[in-house]
Amino acid sequence: AAMKGVELEDGLVMPTAVSARRIGRGTWDVELTIAEGKTREVRRLCEALNLQVDRLVRTKFGPVKLGTLESGKTRPLTARETEIIGALTKGGARSKHTTGGARRE
Image (cartoon, rainbow, N blue to C red; front, side):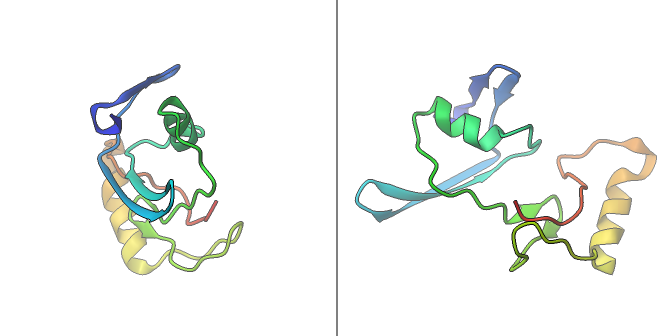
């Protein structure tokens, strides 16, 4: 259902990728890739699909992989990340990648 899109109050949410694996009785690990990242979009998407979220982990923000970055912490961008973000933002063109700082929420 999520791959077809879900209508929320601020528009259609359509993940670009979804994968799921069973990790226990009635418990699943779901990985979603979204292009925009509106406020609480993943939680609202799951709620609309009657899915309970026990834990939510951001692993990537645009081209920035967060790795082992602790919750609430920041790190400097690498030279490559800076280069990619610069290329994505040249001329004000919008991209599916977001360009905020590296931060785990």
